[in-house]
Amino acid sequence: MTNKSPFKTTEQRQRFSRKTLNIMIITVSIMIVLFYNMPGGIKPSTTENVENTETQVEVSDTIAEISDTTPSFDPKTQLSSLKIIEKATAKSHNIDIQSWNTTKGAQVLFVEAPEVPMLDVRLVFNAGGARDPKTLPGLALLTNGMITEGSTTHNVDELAAHFESLGAVLDNGSYRDMATISLRTLSDPQLRQQALDVFYGVVSAPSFPEGSFQRLIKQLTLGLEHEKQNPKKLVSREFYQQLYATHPYGHRIQGTAASLKEITIKDLQAFYANYYVSSNLVIAITGDIQRADAESIANIIDERLQQGSPAPRLPTPPTLTKDQQHFIEFPSSQSHVLMGALGIQRGDDRWYSLVLGNEILGGGGFTSRLNQTIRQEKGLVYSVYSYFSPMAVTGPFMMGLQTKNESRDEATTLMHSILTEFATKGPTEQELQDARKHLLGNFPLNIASNSRIVNYLGLIGFYNLPLTYLENYPKQLEKVTVESIKAAFTKTLDSEKLITIALGKQDITTESKK
Image (cartoon, rainbow, N blue to C red):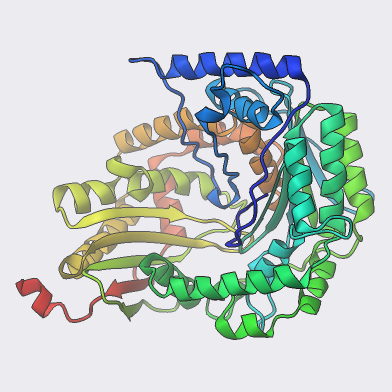
């Protein structure tokens, strides 16, 4: 089992049973690996930019797993080979999204993808950290982590052994908006059915064992201690707390030392009963199966879960009324700075202008204005960036940098002035064309693998985006103009009302003289 939460569980790998196909896949995989590693050869990009990186599925490929010259009956090797083929042969294609609702109200999104014999099922519940009770932060994360710790029919070790023998991967994650449980398996009817049968039990009948609960509590508590020495996490945590105050987005989704002592298994069971229900669920399915198979999978999940009620809409975050600066004293020669404000929520029409504008401002790496000015021309920072993070309700806009303590004030002031100028004057026409070309060029790779597709399906369903979202994305980028970027930034951000969080040494006089 792999896990996007901080909890360390036994990774489940993949297996397959058809020996002939296994040998063919291994042979082709070796040829592909050799070809793409030839001198001067064209190598597929291993970086796939996804709009919401929180929902990415990590795939760990090991060449050694497919390099045995004597093919054996090893499903783990077979699916690892399939993953390499999926990446190496990825290409753009039209995404035909089919959607329907189950009897109890779950939304299903399905894309048939027969190119590779795999199946991905991703369950997205409106059960993220924003649903934590005010007095029990961390409850959503713990509940999600415990779901894969055993069912009423399989303990955690039996789950690990079962999925490993079938060549299936069980995955889960908890974030501010959503909580996910996913299965990746081979599409062979017999293997997938055995994997799905166990998956249904994990989702619908978690056992919440005491031993696992105590272990996860200890892991989270230890994580809180480690966080005190992690400047990036400290700055990010403070930024969210100051920006969102008492709003559900503002609290620590990993919990606090006090809340972790208060949370009980009964709390987990109650949270599960409230939020892990059909009416609060999006089912995303893609792979080498037909519509009837997808309907069967969705129907069984729907039948096993309680109907429940959809989670209520989150409140609107409070608006900033003035500029704010906060400093965190930290014993380091380097400073970390985050500056930002409220941005937009998912589905906002400004998104396309903002995403292109941000590519120019600070999201485009070395070619961005922030990087060219603050890092390349002035040499003030190690890194600098910006991004929008749209969420169910208004998500944040952030600019960040890392620099020496003595360069902190100058770099921060310059970052603010670049944002102000950009929001007022907008980009040049050449900057716009270059950024658009870059985003349009990368987009096909973002929907070229099953893992990316199922992630997007989950996002589209969860955030109630149109089914034509992927199809229309390039078209919408083509419509963006210099004026639309200026208008979007002006409407979204007030450069005189930003929150700035700086971490480092306050007194740098002695250090500067060294």
